[in-house]
Amino acid sequence: MAGIAVVVGMTGLHATRPGESNPDGGARSPASGAVATASAFSGITLPDLLVVLPAGLTGPELSRLRATRGIRKLISFDGAEITVAGHPASVIGVKPGQFRSWVPLGTASDQSLWTRLAAGDFIAGTTTASAFKLTPAAKYKLSGKSAVRVAFGGSAQLAIAGVDLVVNETLSRRLGLVREVAALISAPGPSMTSLITSVRRILGQAVKLVSLRRSGELTASPASSPAVARHISNYIQLFQESAARYCPSLSWTVLAAIGQIESGDGRNVGPSSAGALGPMQFLPSTWAEWGIDGFGPKGTPEVMNPFDAVPSAARYLCAAGASSGTAAGLRSAIFAYNHADWYVNEVLTLAAEYAAEYR
Image (cartoon, rainbow, N blue to C red):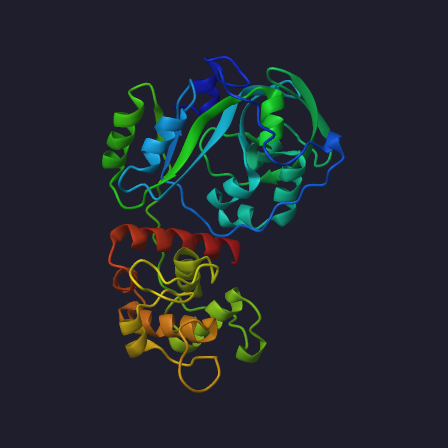
């Protein structure tokens, strides 16, 4: 598949399906005079599969996909091929606050970019922005079913095959993009072959699929420039100091990845269905053995206190194999934390993103 543009370009453009209303989509266009903001993202989701159905995904089809065993998360969005300043481009229409969690960490962290998208500007992949010579804040003519002059909000790495531009839902309706033409699926457990088979069983042979899964390999390395404990004021510093003090052969990025995957850095502290608690999601029995007071107040370790939980996780990972300083030892340690190969791969992939973002 060459990208979303090739697939939906053959179908033509339509604003809604028969019998559907044309919902507002949340964020207003700049012409309305409203100032939109984008809330901070709640966590990174690593996409495994891009699904494109030229006629659009129906509600029942999306429901069946979400109920499929092994699929943890799914988002759908609009899309089509349009022109921007005379250039053909593949564009998707998304809910900014929802889509933000599915892009690389550096892109998700750019608050101003998502605020501009929510306000009605369009954003572009870095390669597209360079090829089209797009200038931030300048207005360009986007032509789909209708033509709209829109400000360019900025560029970033999108890491989704075939996507050139991103607009919000309101602008998507104005351009007449194909409703819910594509979806991103996070299903780290099943093999890719099994996942594709399940999706084709629901959507048929007309569906176009692109694997986005990365194996994610990270060699353990010492943390660099750790924060001074008394000056720890955020999770990054806490991850750095915990690795440096309690497992010098462990990269702090692995702790960061586990913290993000397990609780969104403390946003969802449980209890989980298995009874795990706190920002690093320790089972009570494991906490009883490995919990330490770390950088927290001296006394009984508190599983809900990140200043205790993160150092305890570093200590646990070190004992489980990370102390070896080898890739095999690191994989073994992460597997001990959560007994699933998909979990190991997901932690390593996200850790690599942290390493690239904070190098």
